[in-house]
Length: 61
Length: 315
Image 1: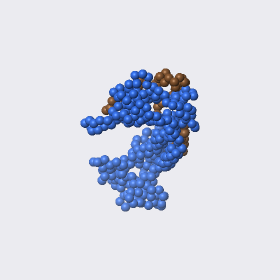
Image 2: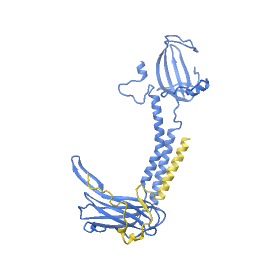
Image 3: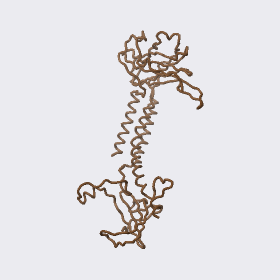
Image 4: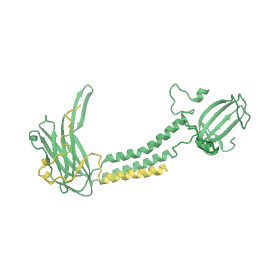
């Protein structure tokens, strides 16, 4: 019984991996936005990234 | 008394009706006191050498008296079975520890699970190679820019040329390279669909530091960075880039590469780990159960220094 469950589990895992690869999934965090105005192309300053002003690295060790 | 189908093996095992029984324990038994009914004539002061061989749920026991050897076979019964058989009131007491011929709760064949895991791992490898071969890895933008501190007092953001992503929904890799040396540059990116206004917003830092201290030489960070934007539909896109940089540097060159449809190997890594969890759990459960069983035997799995097995204690 457990072996059958594991076979099903493995099949689903492989299917998910294949589907994710096919659909272009990623492990990186990216913020998705809708309806960015077309004016950004002519005036890039009219858009502000949500990551703007993020605390940056300011030194090494 | 066992009469047929039995053969005493060598090296701590016995065979009965085609099943191999492993030696579990040898001990000396003395009769100090007698109470109850016995199918043989028992006497106080009798001395017997007992040897148990196990093949759960059965146990094969040898009792050696002066000139007589008696073999008997037993089968493990749960307390509930005995309670039900004799129609005893209440519940049997909870079992403590693991008895020598107690059946393992892991009823499946652990080896077969590992074989299934190995097959899945091979399939995963085939998937990885297959998707890697069919991925387009299409470069759609390659530009080199320069962050100029003098010009940065005004608006620093700009947009790239429009590039087209064709085919099905897929991912987009944005690679940044900046030859920073004990400095950093931060880039606010937005991948914008010119037709629909849909955007993917992300910030990436490229920093590279190195030096020398009491621990020796050290480095931190890299001069390159890569991010994969997931599930981007086909269409016409451009990047909005807003760089920020260390104020002590007047000028930092950097390059941006956009590649369409790349394999993400981390997905396979996660799938591999997910597939590994059930075999590990099953193996661990089987291992701990058998370790408890054999820790009571003459062959404990871990013989700690300064300890002796029970048979050695008895002798």
